[in-house]
Length: 129
Image 1 (tube, rainbow, N blue to C red):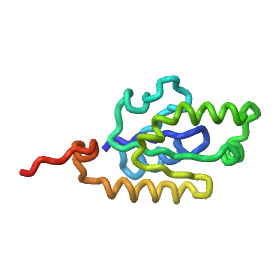
Image 2 (spheres, rainbow, N blue to C red; image 1 turned 90 degrees about the vertical axis):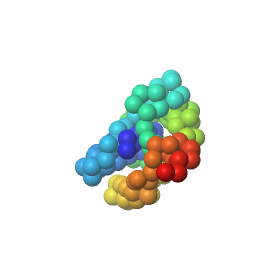
Image 3 (cartoon, one colour; image 1 turned 90 degrees about the horizontal axis):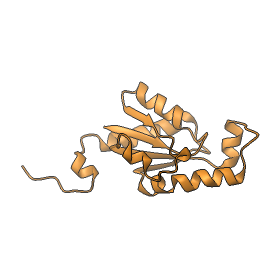
């Protein structure tokens, strides 16, 4: 199962992908927040599961202080992420969660999907055999 993780800067994408890979998942981060292509997340190596990790601007600035971040830049990232957020399989607000908690929630969700066919993931009925 290919897992793709998207979200604004400093929301926890890299950390979650690193931990999921260490646990044996085929996890990848997509820097959708920097792309002008709204559905880049599904065009390049389409995932079986899309996880959206989110954080408020205040949280992002606390996690990764940068002098060039502004509400306008963060709003633009959110605009670029709108398609992914609308189509995600799992949404996780990471502001009040530790990296361990984020990973635990993602893994629980992925385990609940294990054994699900690609057709079922796409909303199609599986043929009865």
